[in-house]
Length: 136
Image 1 (tube, one colour):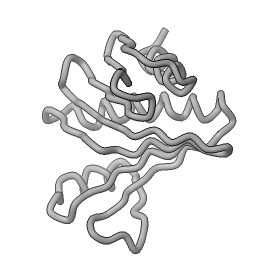
Image 2 (cartoon, rainbow, N blue to C red):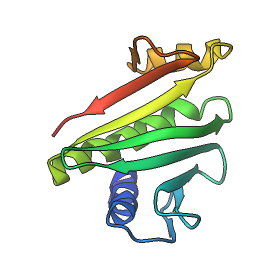
Image 3 (cartoon, rainbow, N blue to C red):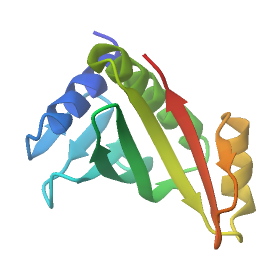
Image 4 (cartoon, rainbow, N blue to C red):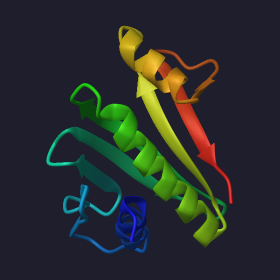
């Protein structure tokens, strides 16, 4: 089983409303605090993400509230997460949106999101909203 497949299974479990900790070879996935908050830890802390989870009839939205990564781990962990979200969009026949809010004084984060093909949502003040949509 490939790395993204084990992450996909862990995320699917969270989307089904199950609470707890799931461990995969590259990730720790937990929502122990609440079913709508998910924390993802990549390779023992080389990258850490926190997301609020919103489920709708036609889409799933993961709104980032925390992110940090050691240099060289942000893009690789993000790509693995994106691959899992693509699979979830297909299996659930729903759009999945990955959303990042960036405060204006974070030019490195903005450059990283743009490099990874995130679109900026217009007319968002203060800060900037970047997103990527995964279709089924």
